Amino acid sequence: MSSKTILAGLLALILSCASAYAGEGGGGGGGRDGMDSGGGQRSGLSSRATKAVVTTLTRGFDRCGTLPQVYRFDCFRHTYKLAAQKLDGNQAYAEAYKALVLVEETLTRSVKQNLDPAQPPKRKGLNLYRAVKPAAVPQIKRQAESAMKQAETILLRSPANKQVHYARIAEAVNSNKVLLRSALLPGGMIRLAWSLLKTAVPA
Image (cartoon, rainbow, N blue to C red):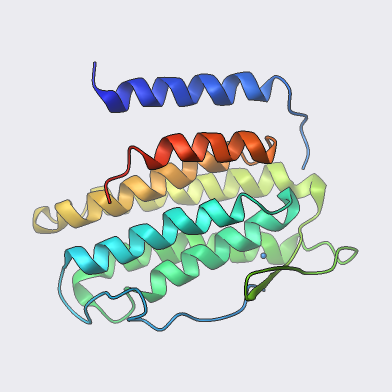
């Protein structure tokens, strides 16, 4: 049995057990990274550009997980916006850019349609994130997860010569999706699950 299979089973067990204790309940993010801020090349496939996107997705979700539940989705939206910006204009990553924008736009619509005017924006670092209505959290989570599944499909169906790079991005999206499923769980459990996942994602 591979280490990834064992890890996946362990993570599923953790989330399953935590769900038993969690109730059914319950980002605009500012700032634009420059398209080269992650060190990615302006054109062509490269390990540097791919790693910049993967790092943005994994670290972004890690930060978002420390926010109160109702603010996380605007933070997730901002994370995918930043990741997509790193590939904007690079035709070698056209499909990957499309996949990331799909998730970003889905989250943008979901957050906008379910904003909670009673809650003030919350600052995290240099960004401000907006709250959604607590009752809308399960629905937004389902919509985001569906978009991430579609994004994975786009990435994994890319041309053969792009698979090495696209598979890494797809793995990061899948890790985000697993964490999204735990978005209603206590923050400590999310961070535990995330710390396990990070060990399986190559640097």
